[in-house]
Length: 513
Image (cartoon, rainbow, N blue to C red):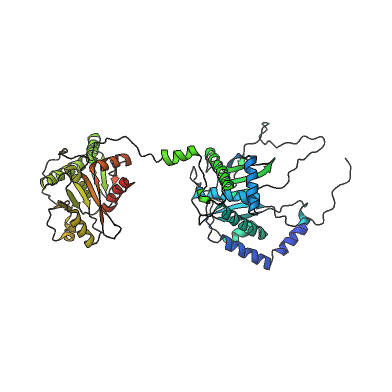
């Protein structure tokens, strides 16, 4: 309109600030602040291990999307009151809640969150146009199960310390700390939190209608979002409510996942204001429906299975379905279902002739190989219970297990027979060149009086006194356990042979869990 500029002259220009800043961060100030950041970020986790919906790309993908965030007036007021009691700003209080959620999701005791700083700490530059913003990496410690009040104190201390040492640009901090650099993620932190508390204003110019720019020309708002970080939460207060949005990397997260996490944040903040003395790790994270799904539905072990069918009978049914399929693979050797079944049946006939039947134990001490599974199946088919004797165990332990378990027979191989020198029980060599039982019938034996209550195996644990302690499991329990767990034998094509100790322990672990 041809009027004079109404603004007062500036006491300094941006060039004056730049010269002053360069002088300020030289020498003693630079050294003091550099030492602070080196010490504060030493040993910090390099990556916040959030559970992503998709694998992290080899090169960071900056495609993103955003979601709105809103907290009601009551929660906003309660958060203000909580912060005031502990001398903490809303920024500190909200950061504490955000860090608590990130720690719970990642399972890490420490999280590093980036936060922008206006960096206008002098009144002379408040009205000066220019770029002053810096980024601070805030390392939040949640170890030791702190209470809400203790966490607020830690966040307050860390925030104030960072603000007192904010003059070094972030890129120089990265050079000082020297984290492991990767193209997959941002250095030092991957999650941002910004609290926008600067007073807002609306630009009004005579004769002009102002609105957001629409690059697409469609007349609507642009949906394109650039995600510079994995997650970036930005909040502000408007009309007594905390509002904002979260930007997220669509290469990592689905919209539903981030929506669920925002619900976690709301519940954690509600828990913080409800009980500031309570432990942060005990704050309710999941809503009732999700907790019920995770804790109860996901862990529901109930499943329909043939309650009267034994493990070896389930194996025999698989033999009928796929006799030629590979059942076991060890190094260059392979056994089909039919071959494995026939060898186990011949051994079972031989064990029956030795008196093995319901509740009779049979020791088995062999190295990793096909014969190990042949032996275990043979014992079960004979109606007996196998007793694993790992050849790696000390001789004294093996002798005790053999004496305490009192097996009716022992399955082993020639190289391991010296471990049981002096044993008076029948010994069967599984890998003998011409075993005496090789000519016995390859047919299934039938139950022969075996019931689900009879013993299936005995496995020895360390015992609280250091002396091995036997754990006994019935055929019925073993059959139910393996039916629900997916069968420790594998019962599928090309299954690799485990060691005897791990095989027996896995079955025992399925049962105890």
